[in-house]
Each structure stands twice: as structure tokens, then as C-alpha cells.
Image 1 (cartoon, helix red, strand yellow):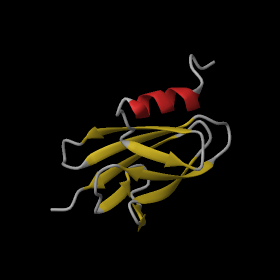
Image 2: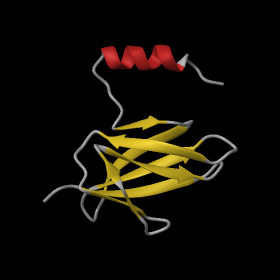
Image 3: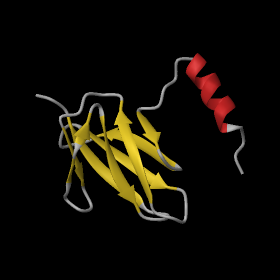
Image 4: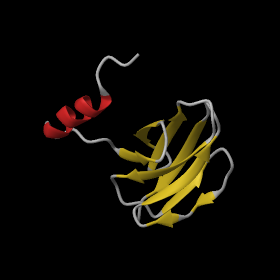
Length: 100
């Protein structure tokens, strides 16, 4: 199981000024981001559940375009984020282009 209660740990890290690079809403998904060698950012999103899940990912940086690298589909931006579906136990990789 978890080493710490997630709500408590997130509260403590938030108080310390540590914020996630990508905010995840709508499912049990863990996301991490890395700079892309092609420019912009890559987001790796892992579905930690058996069932497919639809989530909203909201990067902390400004994104001009988001592309699902497995399907090649451009993801519609809504405000400062986008939604995608991830299969059970699956992973998504999204390239986020920054404005020029």
C-alpha cells in the first residue's frame, strides 16, 4: 500500500511549495512530464486501475497543441488542459507543443 495518506502528503508538499507539473482530474492516473528532444514536453500518464478511464490533464505550462503519440490524434485543448482515455493498466504518451 501507500506509505503515506495521499491527501496528507499532497497537503504537506503543497505547503512546501512543491506542485505537480501536471494536474490530473477524473481518475486514478499518475502523470509525469519531461522535456522533449523535439521541443515542448512529453507527458507520460499511467492508468493505475483495471478499467479504462477518461481523465483531464492540465499541464502547468502553456500548451499550443497536444498530440497522443500512440494514436497520432490531436487532442482538443479546453482552457489550459485536455482530456484523453487510457485503457485499464495502460499508458498514454502526449507531446505538448509550446507557443512559438
